[in-house]
Length: 271
Image 1: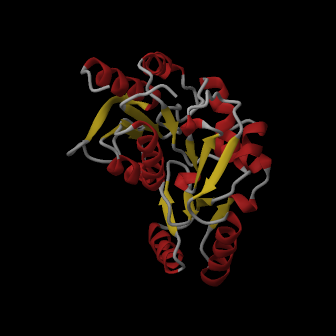
Image 2: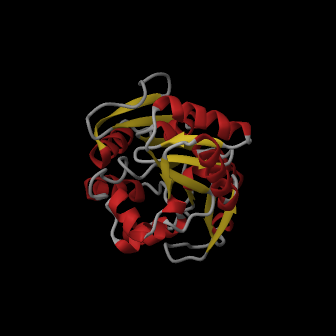
Image 3: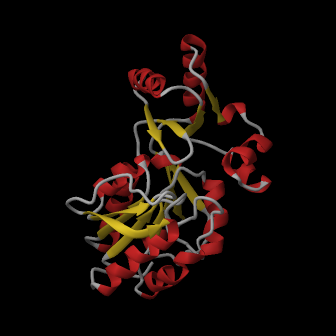
């Protein structure tokens, strides 16, 4: 990577990608501006490494990324040693949270014991994931290739969700609520992934300005960990969190809001 004082960490669904059709083109110009300023864009998402691999090819993105809500981080080989990396560079996957088999066993046990109503990815086949997400069949197959999280379509009450959360936390694990799914994962979240990557950037290149963008509850820790955070407007135009301290509101929904935030940072010479 080129030496840079800023690194952008971004959520995907309903942030860089449109909530309905997963289009990122409204952010294309802003992405090109970041590339012109040698600013890396690190994806931090609930998606799997297989899903992100396809998107990184579309974006021409050869930077590190975090998947499954911070449960694992993928590093292009030689990236922090100065190697020239692109979307096809072989990856090293580092688990920060818990292995998926442990998570799946736990949610099955809690459902049997307490009668919680949900459908997990472990209950789904490719067609079910297509129906739940709007992904095509290839994308759905990639979404099922999970290593450090178990997403659930929650079909029970909010009170049941709180009881489920407490039961998961009693096992030393955690629950994150995303835009479409409730995610069960180890005690590593998107903020931990940002900090893990920040440490490696700073070891290689000196202090960085960490900028984070997200739209939902599972992005809170990432925005808190950043130097500048942006809530992108959700599909209904609302914001998940307040604009306070170092956290701002982007003007616009999804990738249009993402682009507004990045263009404002560049216009104000913050990048």
